[in-house]
Image (cartoon, rainbow, N blue to C red; front, top):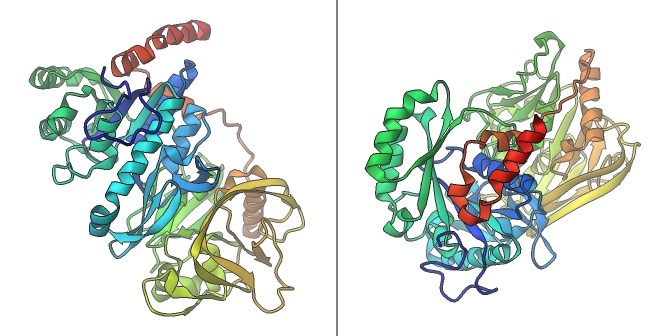
Length: 535
């Protein structure tokens, strides 16, 4: 049966654990940003709610948003944030097997290649495909095999379009995944882009023949309005292709973290998120985030944007800090080059002169220091030393090794602004090159959070990604920003919204029995029981 995980074309000699019985569904798309990540998360939660043992999988991802998770060897590695989120939807522990190959763009046509959570090196696209793709494919198949031996269902996410005919011989996330996982395929088309019927039809026509046979259904995403208006088009598409349109899914945002820089405004433009909370403009504060060219882990600021009364404004580097009450310098895939870009465009001087709370996370922390040394390891230039913004008396020295680790520390409340009063366990994760140390005798530097963090007056730096997911840290920072702005903070509003359940509800019209066959045989009964219980 298609989707049984027994290995398909091109899967010779790699299976570590023998044949498996896992059913696999590949959620593919006609293009990028058609909703694949959200659909996978929603299906995972629906299956998890029905008691099905399910895990997400993406053979190859390209993203500068990453999370630190454990690998099969017990060491920490990194995966794309979407697979981390999908694991939470599936209620399983995230591991590097969920995303065995990660490409992290660093500029100038190069990406850092991460295999099984470990950075291998920086390569141009041609070098990756010529010299490392076979290694990446083998790692991806072995990761899939381990997952398929542990779970009953694997919901895999494709990448971009499955019909890129120039890449069919080296398309790891779509073509190769479908083959070595023996997967059924759900093909998504985004109606918001226009031409959804042509996109679905053309994609089916351009797919390799063996993959075309695996497509069990299509779905139309991001629809607004009366779905009955699509009936004649759906009937014609089904008649021409022989493939059923399983569902028309409504346009909605369940609130899952965005992948990579999707929510960011284009470079050179200012954009604001978090302004839909109903708090009047005169009662809010704005946290300005420089839109670095190689920005990474922008999901760090999602918890701030979801806090009532807080706006997160992404700032062009040639802009200013007008209307900004605090500054948060984000992580970056290339600290040295982004530091130079920040300084050269002028926003660096504005941050140095800013009178208010300033926070740097990971690469942003390094940027706030006095200098970066051994800079050629990180940047694309030849300079050994690059001057930082000088807001913290620390310096960072780069090394080839990379620190990847989940971190939990106990904080005693003795830190200075903007993290004053934080008490208790604070968790996050570190993914960075370079080590940061105080300059001089270090007496003026407090460590507000983890060892290696730094704070002076109302400027602080930390290597902890996801730091604002900690209630105590977020509340202390937001209180400090409102206090410095001289505004009364709006009362907190209880939020019962669960983004994972919202994603599952968004997928409620998908017929998982059709998509997964026997693996979802009990799902309809479980859904019926849940509906009866709701009544």
